[in-house]
Image (cartoon, rainbow, N blue to C red; front, side, top):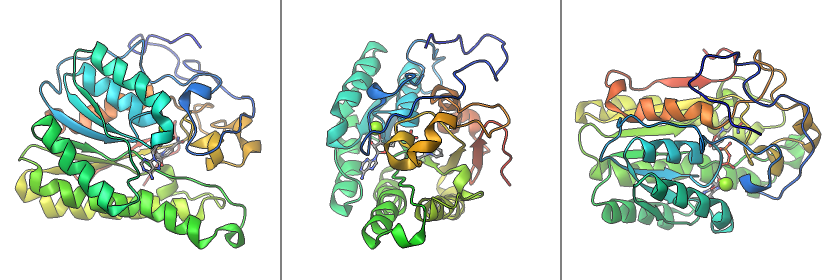
Length: 299
Ligand code: NAD
Ligand code: MG
């Protein structure tokens, strides 16, 4: 896929690939490297304007998809970054580290499983120590496993989805808050599934609704400290989460077709929203859930 100039005025229905796509099964968590067409994370296009100059950010799920797009954008906006991802995603993560360094910023890779409390807590402490402070926490990591029936959702799956999507968020925010200065921001990643759950995503959609409640409650709780908490709620986005079990494989060819814009979003199309919510430009925005859905309205 040739990368469009994301700053040139153009028809958004034609800006990026449309269905049909090939089926392309991968085992979870999947790799961006293996996707066809290749997702656009803004590698060749994102331009920074110094909006995060000197900031220090922790981003989970930073190897691929939405987290990678945020990491590239944050680096080009002037931030140093700690990237978290699973050890099996090293090949994707190496590309992101190189891109951050090309932007002249520090990239510190701290791979590990955030569904374990000890690791999640250590991750925050180490990020703070290695970056010499922490100003932005971006929770992007998530687990999504489609099942046709509640009968097929094992306790193990239910537990793993909640541990990764909700408990890790709780542990990371809890560990981060005493370390964050006034002006710091937390950005969580909800979903259109928070509001319009698919029947195949019982456990996942429930975690995404929980993230909305958590974000709004925490935002009110920490407002007086001058810390803002928001979430982004993406619609269908072309990332490894989907072909690696997030959707039934037979749904991959038409992925994104039902959105009014007629195609899935690309990770690059979310980058500037994460930058906005991280930067001082959003100083009066907190407890907000920002939809990026291709036209399916959120409440
Ligand atoms: P992705 O697969 O590129 O990113 C998800 C990342 O989560 C992985 O790269 C992995 O590093 C991380 N992860 C998963 N389990 C982990 C664990 N136990 N420990 C540490 N890291 C772990 O896919 P994405 O679509 O960019 O997903 C990012 C976020 O966006 C997720 O929270 C997802 O729920 C959300 N989201 C995605 C879509 C979509 O259509 N792709 C839609 C709505 C919301
Ligand atoms: Mg990944």
